Image (cartoon, rainbow, N blue to C red; front, side):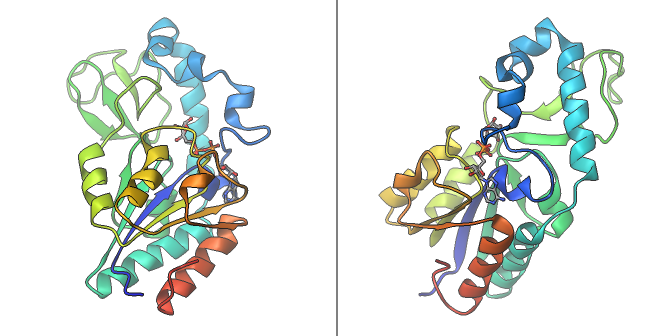
Length: 240
Ligand code: APR
């Protein structure tokens, strides 16, 4: 099977073995915190201090975490496909930078990035590795108290949708890794791939909510299933 262009969608499960919590597993982030009080624009307007504290904690955790073999395998896959004149389109729902730190060069963050901050006054976005607070001045316009994490909250528009749709149509294989398939539009990409007769593969610890959308599924920890996927692709297989 000649696979040139692969579309990979990752979720919190790929960072689980790096020590970053998933959202909907047993004991997940949303079983301990209420997303409606922490991950919506309304929550931020109502209580910015609580929201800043939550994201400051997650930013510190993300900076302490290290990429795992699954992130490394995807960075290697990008290099191998590019060397053959193909492409790995890596769309992540994660807001950490573990893909980048593993060596992936092209990473599209559909839900934004925790290690970036955006000014709600002037719109400027900057790399950000410190805590944010209601006192933080915007480095671009100087406004105080207008800085927020550059992540996509519930009810907000995901990022890079046109580029994602365009890449999906051009892919020879769609692979979802470590995602429950609970949040749209990302959860609908497998069904869209099938409509375009693009083979679909899920690599997950357990069956995802949208498991029925995938032609093939390999269950197991990403640190094992993703390197095995890479090896099969490099050996000329279909990755499953
Ligand atoms: N290896 C592979 N998969 C794993 C592992 C692992 N080690 N550990 C957990 N998983 C799987 C779980 O089985 C689950 O299906 O990863 C998935 C994690 O699902 P969620 O916690 O729902 O995370 P995700 O799908 O990324 O959530 C999507 O929801 O809250 C929003 O913006 C947030 O981007 C997030 C979005």
